[in-house]
Length: 522
Image (cartoon, rainbow, N blue to C red; front, top):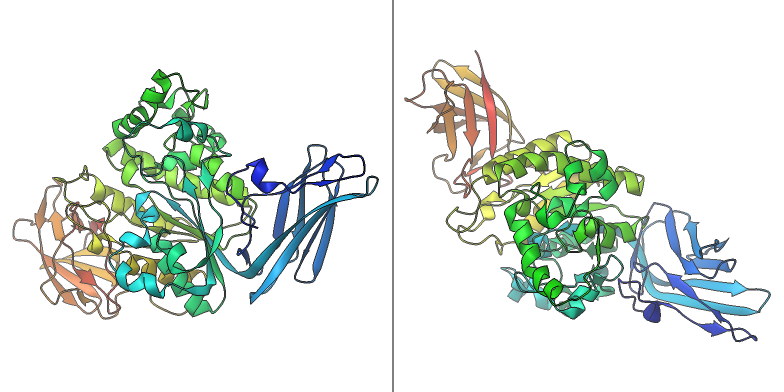
């Protein structure tokens, strides 16, 4: 059975008829379908809709669980945790009404048990394998029966600044925004899938030697607030303004996000099309809470191993939006974990590099440093640095294989417990010395430069906070800095350009992040 990720009754209901001619219906939640992967080692919630009072039976892997549909027809059962299993099996769900001797059933085929990750964010996570730097070599070799992909295509995808048509307007609801179904990983299915998530899945499947399923629901351009529950936004003093009033006129959002909303929605609204709306305004990918409602909310409580995230470009265009992101991103993680009821690992990509003449990237250094600090303070989270693979004139760097690999390194170390290096050099306290400044680094075995040239990217400032380029020398796991223009250094920063020139890496060729830290006295 191939399941659209959209609650279209015509596609999801199996009808049988009783002797009285009354239908018995059975609807599985849209995330369930042929070729899927179920998460190993966790209780498995299976849920859906049927007629009130019907008996529901779920059979899988030697387990049978039964329940009764409630007054609204909703039902769920919980299967016991299962170990990983690469053998394809069937999952069968039946609904019965003993009084009318009627049944309905659905059988999902080719179901595996392994690791399941959810990929979300904006265009650099959405970026398909077909456009990736190594696509010509990778796509023909993409067949892997132990990897399963659920690519949730969305209404309005690739419209950018064009007005939505009637079809896009009609699908601008949480129930209908996404469409997609589970597929085996093949050249045909992989080429349109998230390149980063694809490369991540290949690494995890190889190293863990278990089936891997990835659900991709990333939406190009989407801001952080679109992925957070409205109730969570409204309850946070720093975010509650985003849950008030029409988002298209709300100054809490930046001009670009609202502009895109107008570009997509003004024409259909003027033409009298019934754009789905509520008190926050018309529905759109950038509307607060809308992508949460359309995507993750409809996946819960589906068991996951963790979340892959690449987003931030749309929250970095203004200084105030960068500061706002420092509130929104931890809120998003806390709230997703609260809804799923567990401390899900949250692995994310740092913004890359781009010049300001090609993009409004003035505040990217601040944003990258904020992400670095959040990775250190948010429990069970990890970050992959990407600034060394940015492009000066393109916000969508084509090198995604290395970024997917770096995310997989974080997962292998922090989620799967491998004793491997997973991070580039991380700055420890900087100390003023007679000859300049000394910075210790962790994750610094084999500290070197990526191109065998002198260290680039360090700057020093005194109390006036005016930064000057510093000469840097590597000494073991330390970097020694000097600058003739600074007599009393107070702050040091690294990679502090929108298009970073930094070249500091460790022996595993993992790069240091953009950072700014104080200089302590001797």
